[in-house]
Length: 216
Ligand code: HEM
Image (cartoon, rainbow, N blue to C red; front, top):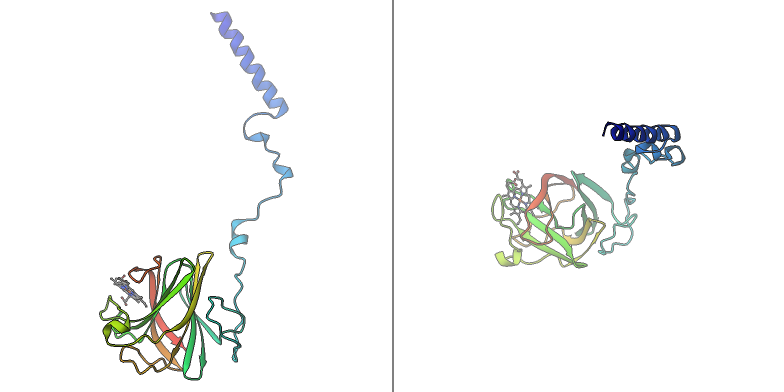
C-alpha cells in the first residue's frame, strides 16, 4: 500500500514538473502577447453620436421620423429628452426624440404638475406612428384626448420612427389653434413638461419625466 502511494506521488510530481517546464496548464496557455489589446470600454462609449445640423433657415420638413440635417432651427435637451423645433408662419413643427421603444410626450403650460397641460403624445408600434392631442385634467392625469373633452384634434400631420431603441415623433401644430383644450404656443419661452414611457400605449406611465422652459 505504502509503495503504491509513493508510486502515485512520483507520477503527480512528474506531471507537475512537465507542466512547469513546458508552460502547460491553467491560464498560462493563452498566447496573450499575440492578441491585439481590446479597446477600453470608455473609448467605445465616448464615440460621439452624429448630431443633425441646425439651420436658422431650415429646408424641407418631412414628418418621416428622420431628423435630417437642416430640417430644424433649434434643439433643446431636457435630460434624455430632445426637442427639435422650427416656426413656419403660424405653425410650429417639432421632433421629440428619446431612447425608448415606448411613448414620448410634451405638455405645454401646466398649471402645477400635470394639471391643465396641453399634451402631445406619440409612439411607434409595429412601424406605425400614433400621435394624440390631449389635455390633462388633474395634477397626475388623466389626460384624455381633447376630442373627449369638448375640444378637437389639432395634431393631424405627424410621423415617427422607432429604430435601434430610439423613438422620434415629428408633428406640426398651429401656434394658436383656438381650441379651449389647447394652450397657445408662443414664439419665446414656453413652460413645458415632458415624459418618456417604456410602453407604446396611451395608458403607459412614464419611466422618466421632467419640466423646463422651451425656447422657440
Ligand atoms: C398614463 C399616463 C400617465 C400617468 C398614469 C401619470 C401619472 C403620474 C403620477 C402618478 C405622477 C406623480 C408621481 C410621480 O412623480 O411619478 C406624475 C407626475 C408627473 N407627470 Fe405624469 N402621468 C402620465 C403621463 C404623463 C405625461 C404624458 C407627461 C408629460 C407630458 C407627464 C408628466 C409628469 C410630470 C412632469 C410629473 C411630475 C410633476 C411634479 O411633481 O412636478 N405625465 N404622473
